[in-house]
Every structure is written in C-alpha cells, then in structure tokens.
Image (cartoon, rainbow, N blue to C red; front, side, top):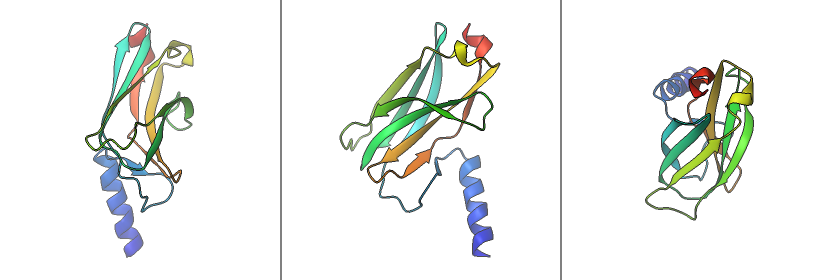
Length: 131
C-alpha cells in the first residue's frame, strides 16, 4: 500500500510540473526552480530559469533531446553562492537548428553539493519555429 501511495504522489508531482527526484530522495538541497522558459533568439534558443532560493546548490545541467527520452548535456551552468532570495540563470543554445529534428526537448537538472539531482519538467519546442 505504501508503494502504491508513493507512486500516486510521484505521479501527481510530475503532472503538476514540479521538479521530480532523479536519484536519492531526502537530498539536503534546498534549491527550488520556480520557472523554466524558452525564448526565440534569432536561430537560437534562449533557455531561462529562476530559482526561488538556493542552499547547497552546485550547478545546473541544461539537457537536450531529439526524442524526449534520451537527453544529452549541452551546457553546465554553475550556481551562485547560497542565494537566499533565488537567482536568474540563462543559457543560449546556438546549436538548436543543428539538432537535426523537427522537435527538441529541454530540461534542467539541478545538482547539489552531494551530487544529488532533480529535474524540471520537460519542455518541447518545434525547431522550424526557430529558423
């Protein structure tokens, strides 16, 4: 019964768009990504995210996929020192068009000092809109 309840809670968090645990649960990380957006910047994608607060934060991986399943790291963005009020981050993906797919998928993986990580929800974008 506990396992079933945990699966339901995980599903509800995923559907609600909250960051989902990737590795260990109970991480000491107190970093919460509160927004994650993508904007057109010429033929590139500008990936923007904002944290509400940061504690024990190490870095962020910007990950991209052409199938929504297999993701590759396209950038590492190092975190600011413990930002009690949060911080704004961005990365410009100049290789978006070279991805060779109709759609690309992005997600951010936040990694704490113990190397535990959480993912944002996945965002899907049509590449032809960026040409």
